[in-house]
Length: 231
Image 1: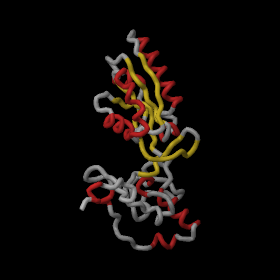
Image 2: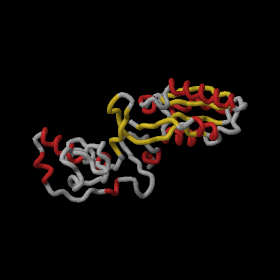
Image 3: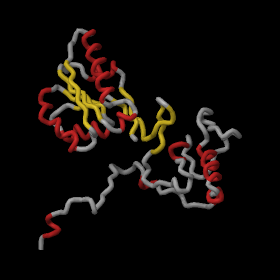
Image 4: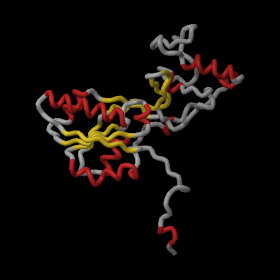
């Protein structure tokens, strides 16, 4: 899931300066799971901003709304009829949600309430860790389901560096386990450690974040183009 955290109230106050009526919009998926932008968080943040602005002598009206997903038009379209009532929309969605709102409602000021951090998951209560950088050429099949691009501090692709200690800790930060130490242990449990000794070609980085916006096109899901049926 996409993991995000709320911006400080002081930052949001500055962002909202001069605005008198705000719609705070939460998202019911990723950022709700990481307790950054769900219904509960929208209510708490809206209350905090109301109190903070009142203390400054600038009363701001903040209404609240929640949509299931901010990243799809069909879920945000019901907001359209009410947006002309507000000076701005404060989005408690990830960066994709903010941009989707801004693209759909181009005459409405859309402001981000969150800092989008990474794609990851919970490792313990109240802790989320990065697990994927979206490189577009997944190699988890050869590393036992552990991503060296994300979890190795040096993004090494052919084994551990010389700084790994005997306890399997990273030399960059001893609090971090060595990704390649974990990969070896995982492959050993699977009885596949010999596969790690195979010589493999360099990773294809052309699918990673380079050269503009990436996209996926599924022709089987696209709407038919009427021109395809013209003689």
